[in-house]
Image (cartoon, rainbow, N blue to C red; front, side):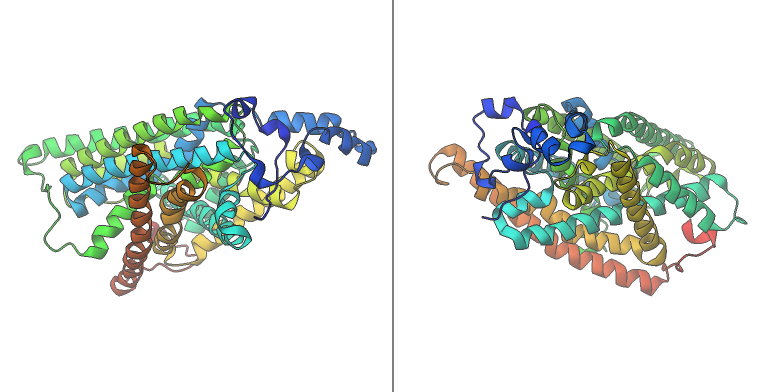
Length: 483
């Protein structure tokens, strides 16, 4: 089996050893970052005085507790996309919408649990591709590196575009070139990506979570008041328990994909857990995250759909009326930018770890470290912005990328991890193993169905955008293109 990079020994907590967790299959790298690594660094680079650099660096990237992990996962998972769920309910109907939201949330909790167990058993796994390397070797490692980087950069681009839409809406200055707001959005994303540790980033996470909760609250209350004051009141709202008769398979699966994307936190989980001082506490984070997501998504989906009906827009705050939409977008600005920038930080850390595996630069506590970090973050942000502005069908393309990649990160990879890395003894050796074999088999099949049907639905959506003329121009100044 190919060997992957072993992180600093300090990142492997005593709690893991106490749980009899083995990591020997990853290979030993004690000669580089194991016991005595600080002494070796000083012997090789005495002029750098690396004793404090390495020690401070290990402490800096080893300070994440389960509460801050929960916040980081919330930042990654709950963003403006949560307000697309009412539109999904309108497509599949109230009954299917509630069932899908709850069931997909429970599956996300379980697959996140599998991901966490892999991290405990193999502490040297620092990013998602390292885990895939354990089952698919070097080829799988490189493929997932590309998937990981492309997906997260596309997410940053999506938030840059959402930020532009929000700023155009809030400012309500149609004579101002939209590219001005687009550049502002890019700069804000860049600045918020600069904190290099997730422990530091978690501070922004509290603002992020408050922002989305308040924005959702404003949207729900505003749409509820509008529905109550409309002729006929709430009873006259045209919502249905079942899908509209003319709903196609592509439309239904595209709506399902929007709900699935709202639970897509596993892609960054390895990266976050690498900073934990007590990794076994991840279980608390996964349950809190999953519970909060299920409650928020089910309530916002059901209530806004019931208040607005089949005409609900995506994001739902656009259905709250012109003035309230501007207010809600203003409140949502922190979540748009903070949830976007954490993706830049994750992929930036991945690149830095791979580019400087044996250098103190990776600790980002020297001049060279900070310059390297700022250069990487700036480059990633600019690339994401160029892609988002330069591709007229960017949102539809993001849907396609999500179907191709999230099916793996959230479903079939975690299932394969259980079969190849976590399963103990034969699958039929106990009732527990039989039950887990069936559960992971279902998750694996669902992931493959999502890969196939999600890709089909996304391609249909791209074709439909061209047919109805929804394709905007690249790098346009026209503010109406962002409405």
